Length: 109
Image (cartoon, rainbow, N blue to C red; front, side):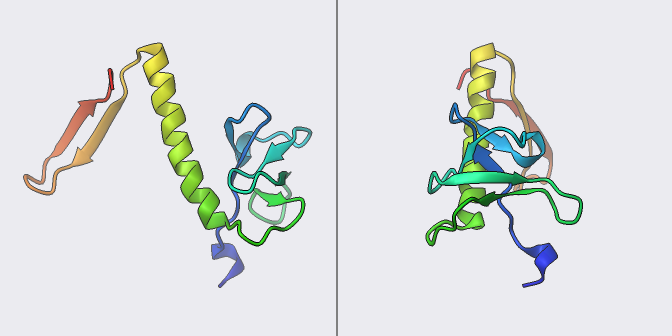
C-alpha cells in the first residue's frame, strides 16, 4: 500500500478518557490507545501527516480498529454534549425514496 494512503492513528484518549483528535493533541500530555490502552505519542512533524503512534508496538491493535472506535466515540460525545446543553442537533440526509433532502432534530433523544 502506498504510504500516503495508509490509515494512521488520528485519535487517542486523554487522561480523563476523552477522545482527542491529533490536531488538538499537545505533545506534553500523555495519551492512550482507545483499543489496547497502550501509551500513544503524538507525532506532529513537518514531513508526514500528523498522527499518534504506539510507544510500544502491539499485535492486536490496528489503525482501522481505532478509526472505527473513534468514530463511534465522537458521535456519542457530540450527542451527550447536545443533550446536556439542551441544544438542538440538526441532521440532514438525502432520501432514497423521494430523492429530496430532509432535515431533522435529534433533540430530546
